[in-house]
Amino acid sequence: MTSKADWPVINSPVDHESDTRLFFNQHEWETIEEATARIIPTDHDPGAREAGVVRFIDRYLSSIDYIYASADGGGFLKIAGKEVDAWRDRMVEMQETYRQGIRKLDDTSHEKFGSVFKGLSDEQQDEILVDLSGRGKPEHMKFDTSGEHSTFLQGTFDEGLDFFSALALHTRQGFYSDPVYGGNTDYVGWKVIGFPGPKSLADTNTLKYSVKDYYLQDYDWADLIPHLRGE
Image 1 (cartoon, helix red, strand yellow):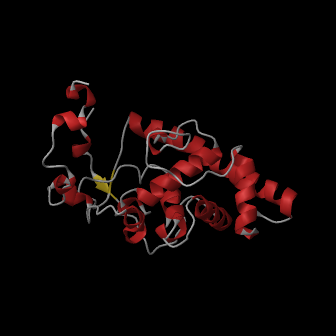
Image 2: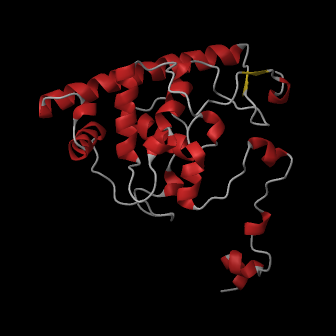
């Protein structure tokens, strides 16, 4: 198996100015855009809509051409061999999960409010998403290691997930991932959390971008590792 460093580069970074659809049809695109905008809504900060999360999801679901960004952020790697078959199988399953999920959103919306999901108010859309997820609308996220909605307990792997769980995961990924993948337009996801990320993936490989200034420079190991305190 060859290293990813040897894989050829195809395509360019996802164009944030383009609303060309590679997987979704127009109705599906608009429905998913509405749904992601309720998962990370716009308030005093930009949300999933402004970040272009639907574009990220569309490219991800489209096939195998937008999976691994090249190290310099200049495009995407061309996968080959068994990896192609594995990814295509995975994408076919996830594509069907989304298509069935969108139909379920619309069917439930029609039954409850007499309209497709994208035609509902924000509050009605929230109600439909709560019904679909089987869980109550979460409170604000907390950056700690405890509680049902702990940020440290959120997975990053989507295989086998139901529609709502996949949608919630992909919304987070599209909001916070590197812009090369089509989301996080104008770095809005990073700005919201105060993350001064790299201007390109190349900067992380040339070490032009570094997080060393954010590490504690002067510390006592006993402050970091409790059992060294001798308590």
